[in-house]
Amino acid sequence: MMQELEVRVNVLEEKYKGALEDIKHLEEENIETTNVLYELMENIRAVDARIDIVADDWGNQFNG
Image 1 (tube, rainbow, N blue to C red):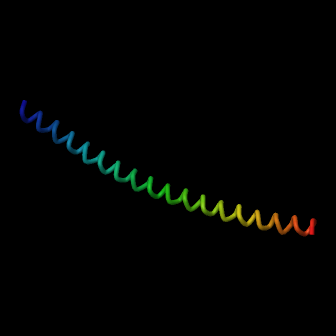
Image 2: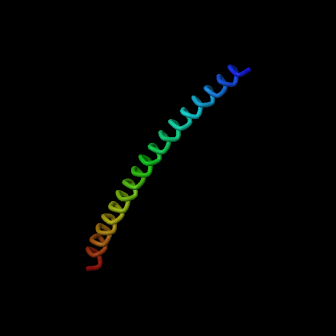
């Protein structure tokens, strides 16, 4: 009986360690994903600003 409990505890400890490793991996992926999304957002803002400049220049050609 005691040996069976020790085996169960060992199994649970291994599962716990595996879960902690999974959590750490997911946290790292979350940080990477957040960084990529931030970079994309900044690139979109830069492109949007360039579009505004081009649109203004284009509009001034016809209005100016």
